[in-house]
Image (cartoon, rainbow, N blue to C red):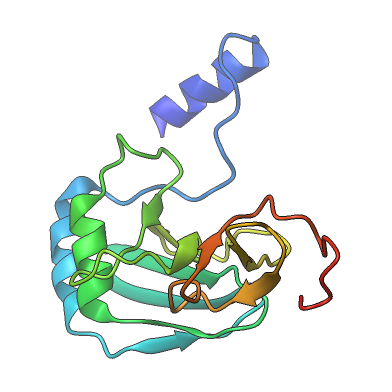
Length: 173
């Protein structure tokens, strides 16, 4: 309480800047216990277009939340407990101060083209606000563009490239 009051005074005096509007990251002591709990949770299909699902449990009197958001506009993304737990164990607050955890498949290293967002913090009603986005796959000549599925690599002969021209003479997108 005293430190937040002190921080508020520093903000008013122009010495410090306001912190992010994201909730607090739980004590590091609970991170391992929360990852253990996540590991045994059933898979969850996260709906497209900024669909969300929150894994929440209380550990040592602190409500911990891992909020998943599907940034893709068209496809569900299924998250599994073991992948989430492993991703959380590899993550540290030194990587991102906002609690954003990179999620990867533990067996393949696949990251759903960064369309699956995870935030670890104390339980709250906060969620990221954004428009949805798309995985864009192009052939190597940038002549054909399709919307790719975040659950799979781009088709053979195509690469993910958000800088592909919109149609570039082809109406396949």
